[in-house]
Length: 455
Image 1 (cartoon, rainbow, N blue to C red):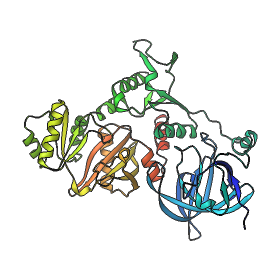
Image 2: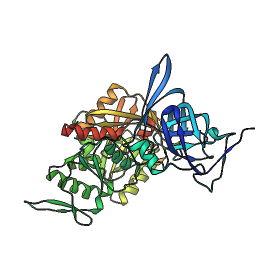
Image 3: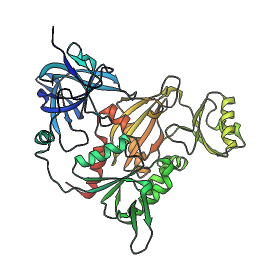
């Protein structure tokens, strides 16, 4: 019988075949499969076999240490993550070394930036070989900081990068962490700037932006505004102030504020020849019947103009339900859009991510059973999808019409062809990076570099 290795809930291990000398793992018997953090995952063929190459930053929050890996591909599998996302992952087989013992395990490759550990050791890899003492940690020892330095910090390139500020509200948000990391990885000086801590001095000769504690923020090369809807007015005012200081904004203030006005956005898109579902607009209409008729009757969608992430969006399946919903919004004196319901879309829509005039990634979002809104925040699932040239053309055209360098363009497939639903100026990265394994945060940084002709 094999002597089992006793481990704690966290341990250091290594992957000799991948050239990873040491990496911290979360030992989790609740997880079936093991997962390794990987970015820039690219399948390729070698000697008639399928392989995959990928990059790994083995140390949490250190993006300068990168290991380029290659491994034989053994499978592609749909895995449900702890946060509920279903994503298709590449599976490799490689040798794990832990506590001086080596054996082969299967590992799925995924972006684990939002997790606390670069490696998750699941029960399939442990079976018959490991006993877990969940109260302990690092029973097999830890590398010293000198050892880590020797492994990972010895040959770090020193480059003079750009000074980039991320203008947002929550530093813990996956998208914000990824953008900061992507910028640092490309050699730039990244700063998280909390919108609420910024204030402005309006002055003809010396305009300024100050940060909590009196720090002056005038010396940035670029800012990336990621403004939540509730902060649109103040966030756009701040972005405008940065623009007045000749700081490059990845999305400018005018483009963001017009993208937040759903009605104006739709009018702008129609004027630029982009098709949308038939839509009616009213301020608490008196003539509810005609408004319903105008969009082809029930079922129909009723949207509050101020809604976001699927909030304030209601499906009215019958004329009576439509009247009730419209009358309810009427009592709030709210601005509402009514829109034809595209039944054949079957609770699915497409999110195309446009950066600097190019579609850099696309996913299909599918609503939960019984739900018609496919938003990831509402439990929708994301999967990779092949988009048509026409869908790409619409997304690029929509981003251009809205003057957005970065846009999440939502498209629905209907019997009369692709229709545009919405253009988002601060699209989230977690769902789409998880589904496509694309480094979208890196593409955003590249768009800033291109503006400065930075090499």
